[in-house]
Amino acid sequence: MSDISVRIQGRAGRITLQRPKALNAVTYEMVKAIDAALDDWRNNDEVALIVIDAEGDKAFSAGGDIADLYATGKAGDFSFGQTFWRDEYRMNAKLHEYEKPVVSFLQGFTMGGGMGVGCHGSHRIVGESSQIAMPECGIGLVPDVGGSMILAHAPGHLGAYLGTTGTRMGPADAILVGFADLYIPQGKWPSLIQQLEECGDASILADASDTPPSGQASANQAEIDQHFSASNLPSVVASLEASETEFAGKTLKALLRSSPLSTACTLEMMRQLRTATIREALQMEYRFTFRAMEHGDFIEGIRAAIIDKDRNPQWQHDAHDLPRGAVETMLAPLGDNELTF
Image (cartoon, rainbow, N blue to C red):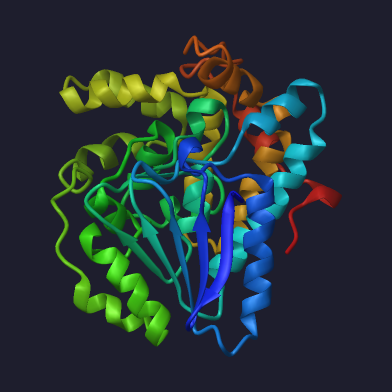
């Protein structure tokens, strides 16, 4: 069985991720298949809309498939990762800017590269099991695949908090922050997909939507804004350390688990991208990921989380004393290697 099914059913272009045992992690081949389908269906009058879903209960997609990225980067070959991210980001932009409705059904975990497939369409559906997160800082990357744009546009400083700590969002928080549009109980999904295939009209989704269970983000908004309005990582850390609340303590612990270089760059991206387009955000993300293997903490982050699984990464910087120049270097323009579309 292929890792992805691309077909036309009725009025719908259908994309189904088919790697449930791997939590539908997105491979380079899957990226290329989605990109090609978007091109094929753009001017096909038979296709009124696109429906994206995934097999399995645990995850729509828990991220990008990083095994090949680690193996090539560890061997000193940075070009595979740079090519993967370049083509993936172009596909993310294509989804975001697509001329036809794109409906995605996001059960279970939707993270990282999976967010880039599922959260750029026009109608993003979450249900009772949905958990959306951008945990890239924990492996030495930054929130990418266009996630930096969504986070930067979030209310207040929620984006900085979610992007640096990797905190998971349930359905209500995902809608509040901008990663999803509608909450529809998952029992309705199969019949809705069938109706979409038959009628090709995404407006039917509104009638099926419901009110999601209450989330956490709005309840903690004031405290999040207090700490994450600080201009740089050492200042955010100092603000959290000065607070005696339980929330601040948990947030500080999560923040300090991540790569200081990644979290500092994420904070700077949140500041710069508050009014950015998808292309501007992806371009800045690519500046970081292009350098992530050679100059960032990505290889060490993957080693600690996935390879050796010791959960004890040796980051190259300290969150309390991060040189400003380190952030500027990682986010500087790439010249001839700048991401283009």
